Image (cartoon, rainbow, N blue to C red; front, side, top):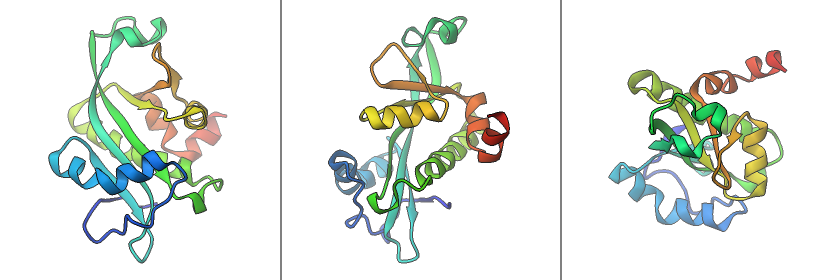
Length: 169
């Protein structure tokens, strides 16, 4: 899967994930968020530039107090992290393992950023129970906040590679 930065030639209007919040954000706020630098938006376009999936990634500061004791022990009060602010796959492609591929591609972007500037965790606020289950399946751990999950960067390095996941299972 090849992610590309969101650009004017990408057809966002036809994207439908089945979640109106995620669909609406792509159409109404994605270009603004990317332009202002509050998030970087990456898309997975088809050959006609229709969006098949997208992810928004932002720098983040995680409160150590929100982590379970086993993760938060020894951490500074504010932990440099990356937030997967949005992750959505077109409804027609769901159920084929492509959500995992989109997550893997997002982790690749985050790991590259972490290699350049640091960062200890990947953070996600699951939009619903289905998303919560998806992220837990991919190694994310619950925090003390409802539907907030984290993944250590070291685990993200393993999770991004399906071959590594299969070997670790």
